[in-house]
Image 1: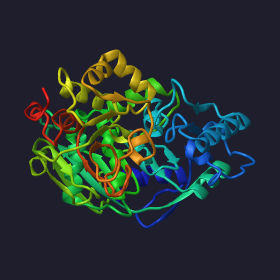
Image 2 (image 1 turned 45 degrees about the vertical axis):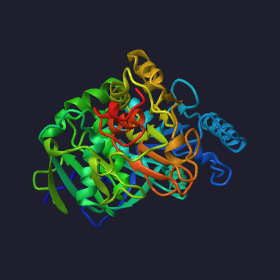
Image 3 (image 1 turned 30 degrees about the vertical axis):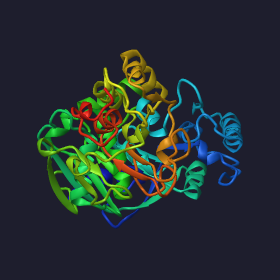
Image 4 (image 1 turned 90 degrees about the horizontal axis):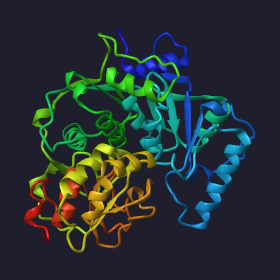
Length: 421
């Protein structure tokens, strides 16, 4: 019996001939990503040595720029840490900064066939690059930094074969909401994507799907490698890599086919994404106070381009705050050059620095009691973006942008029906 992608990657990293569901895999870690939040005095440890500074990446992304003195002190400590250990890949505030998973993508730090860990739950985002990427806790990160190793209990893999072609205006977020609504929770399982429609999905779309695997409680999310992926990685990272493909006789816990041509605009109702998707028309007309596009899931250049296309020549509705957060400063620059930022700002949006900010309710878009937000980010949990009495609907960037103009939840193309213009 053959192995799945994730089993083959973990087998390589552990030196085992084969890895199966149920095994305990002790693996060598290729890349460890640590964040500004790792340097807060409440969680940091006095590390005396690093196993290999060349395998470490530091990225400031959650509380950026520092909104308070505690964050500022953590940032200072992290700068001293990077200098002390000679960590070359340090993404401090500035041109190279951004949300960690976006920076990993921008620089192709997650090489196909490799193992990457980070202390953030959405680390599975790097699985779009045919990597085994997973979030780990603070004690496990200390162990990785000092020994170069970690361990995983290997779960079964659920395979999704993508077929067909998305209709105009439908995006990867709609694919995810369809998958979450139909198949639900994937706790202790891995997700593997492939199929003939993969070639038609941009790497940004794949990143959205991989990132959102965290909301299904998946352990790992991996994608098959193709020419588009390998060309992207080779252009950004000179390191050698060996992409992994599933064996023809790989054993899956289940295998499903998703016809992309049948996906429609969907919205997740507040408080959870699992088994909570509804057709957009079911919530059309719901008034909103805030519309947000950003996060590691939907702060890509594709997302900003779609938002700009939807709002071009229109105005954000009175009483609505439309906040757009690029995933990285590099994406922000690309959006500036393409004119997307100007279009968004002309419509009345505010475009922020690259940060996790509003997505996790940290800063730059926190919700007040009773407010309603429609978001193209990672989570819609109660209290996720601010006060627990606020309500968060989740949708695609196109739907969020259209709703910002209309002042109510609405499908893209219909925003003028309820807008101030």
